[in-house]
Length: 47
Image (cartoon, rainbow, N blue to C red):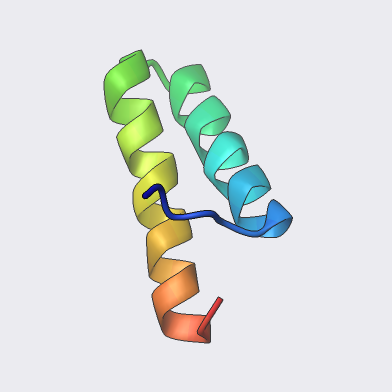
């Protein structure tokens, strides 16, 4: 079963990934960075 994120965390992951791409990071790494930030926020803020 996939874990469902709320809309804000999905947007945070996408925004971080896009910013990373603008800095020249690969697509895979950018996606990983976006997901890591969203996971951290969810864990830290209970989201």
